[in-house]
Length: 248
Image (tube, rainbow, N blue to C red; front, side):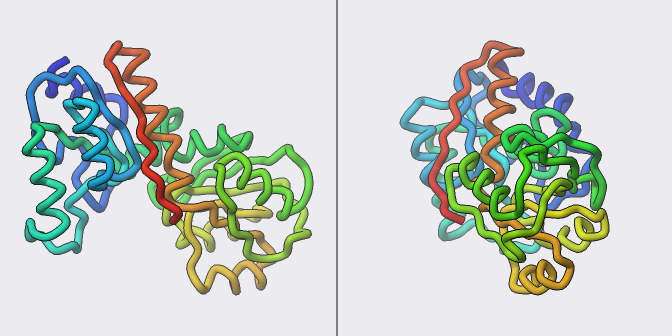
């Protein structure tokens, strides 16, 4: 497959033009023109680049790429080393941020809901990135937190009452703690995201809505892996997901 063909397939699938994002979506670093093997991962860290190079990958496809708005634009230090490694090995870097969060089937939110057994009822909030639905597992906030921990393979953090009965749930993967007020306005019993901020504890206590922080990286592993599986199934290209450990 040619690189331009791969980009066209991803753009048609993810529709990046629909999102006002914080980084460029699509091709960020251009490598060789022919793509036979793709490595996917959450973040284009040096560890992922090294692993991709060792596997002879032609392209790396990630959720968190480079060139974020507001960051230092100079190519030096850590950024220089990462880009140098990509260019040395002639590996392309492709990144899709909010388009991968929002995709109705392959996206992080859709895949997290599936992994947790949540029944989706709708999407709302900024750019439709706040999902909500029902948890049929029964039990309270402590039980839901245990369920989330087991599904993600890491200990989730619960803010608020442990005995809060839970039926309706809202969720948004990654660093979406700022959506908590929107989740509260929906009248849900619990909100699941990746990270927590100081004020979220007080909001959880005063609203009586459970807040579950399950890890930025942990909640965003599912979308990029599903996207890679989709590419293999629909186009026959070799794709390998590499889960570089990140406790955050």
